[in-house]
Length: 113
Image 1: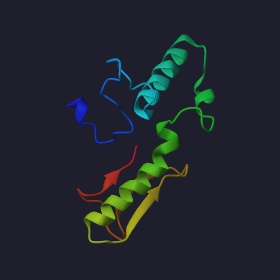
Image 2 (image 1 turned 60 degrees about the vertical axis):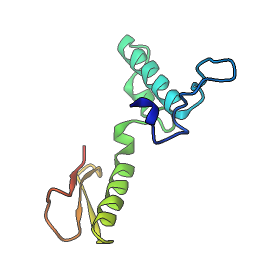
Image 3 (image 1 turned 180 degrees about the vertical axis):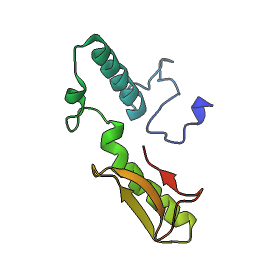
């Protein structure tokens, strides 16, 4: 159910004092709007991907993969009583796997990308 969003700052589903939609200022709405505008600009050729790769223009998976790996490592450690965790990187310096330290991959570990 959409209205059960756990990030209340991201989305607002209650109307304003006049009964109108008032969620335009939530970062969830703004992020989705920015993504749709970027997709349209890329599809029309008005912008290139290199424009969006600039810092601060738009969050891209390639730019957020390291943060995602850190969050996954924290979750894996917490789920395993504070166990040490390894983040393995590929030749380009991008995270490729998060796993318990010193171990091999198992079902609790996560491949990145």
